[in-house]
Amino acid sequence: MATIYTGPVFDMAAEQFAAIADHLAIPDDERARLLYPKRAVVVSCPIHRDDGSTAVFQGYRVQHHLTLGPTKGGTRFAPNLEIGEVAALAIWMSWKCALAGLPYGGAKGGVAVDPRALSRHELEAISRRYMQEMIPFVGPHIDVMAPDMGTNEQVMAWFMDTYSMYQGRTVTEIVTGKPVASGGTEGRREATGRGVVFLAERALIAQGGAMAGATAVVQGFGNVGSVSAATLVEHGAKVIGVSDHTACYVDRRGLDVAALIRHTERTGALAGYSTELLADPADLLAMQCDILVPAALERVIDGPMAARLRCRILAEGANGPTTPDADAVLAQRPEIFVVPDILCNAGGVIVSYFEWVQDLQQFFWTEPEVRSRLNHVLERSFTQVMERSAKDGVSTRTAAMAIGVEKVRNAKNTRGLFP
Ligand code: NAD
Image (cartoon, rainbow, N blue to C red; front, side, top):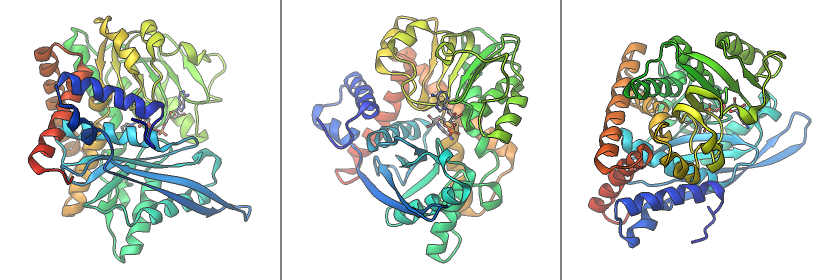
């Protein structure tokens, strides 16, 4: 069925869902209701540029289902953002939240804009305007935003402030991923990357390996990639390759991740860090390593790339990095253990949930409390996925998605047609 969402990323989410629906023997007449977003909005966001001109950017928000509670999901600022990509990300959020046992449906949103081409003032203007346009559509018990690619804690602070000014009081619980100084939680910024490494280590141990001395490669050096790389080093692994949209570096003796982070904090990207360590980004994912962490874009591992992989653990920090074609290849390569995205990067939304709960109660937890509760939820989800995978004889991705889809389906079937 062609819809406004049709496009490569949405089609991928739909294809994955069809496979899970077949696996769960979901009747045809229930499928569209589970797959298609409940509602979506498109807005025009005008801002004054620094040169005095006016520019208009298209913004989106998609709420996938309203069955389990408010919707929850990130906000992406990216030049070629399309509503189909946003919808796919919202759908994946639904299965992710359900798998982790969070009381949310999935959502996602964003603006088709290159944040790197904006001044700080322009970024603030577009952030505030986007939230302003979203006010009729979101709320602490309706839809709660968070950061994603191209947005960060500062953008969340502007979102929260804009919504709060409209309400005439401070409403911290309208977004998560805020700075701690503005009602955010300890440990949110690091949550996704730390979760990726917690699960990669669990997978490595399940395979009879150990983190100490393991080698790792990380694609993407933003929030998820840089925190994953730093945490891998903290846990005794050696990061031998990293990349972002500007550069790719390889050093088999182990890169100095702390120095790379200092460099990106200073300059905004990896470019300019070194000339000797430069490598071809096309070969990064195919490097021999114990742990491979794609932490940038969707669909970077397609069928041919899946055949080239030489990792033991594929820990999917990004959303949707592996295509269904690649999954078919990986099904024939049992030597590679996949920690699927909806499990692997769930640390972000789990700690976002903790932040929302703390904001609603105005009662804040310590960093160790956040960490230990995060690890508890990740451990529970990992065990559920492993058990389901063994019981049904299916891949870890099929197992993870089956658990998520089943929970949403059960709730829909007990509630009725409305949500
Ligand atoms: P970010 O904007 O902080 O960083 C994105 C990184 O990807 C940047 O380093 C950028 O240079 C790099 N990148 C872009 N194009 C690239 C290319 N062609 N090759 C290599 N690198 C490239 O974004 P983020 O928040 O770290 O998100 C990264 C991924 O993780 C996305 O798929 C996002 O949906 C997912 N994710 C993020 C969170 C979170 O809490 N931030 C949670 C769950 C999942």
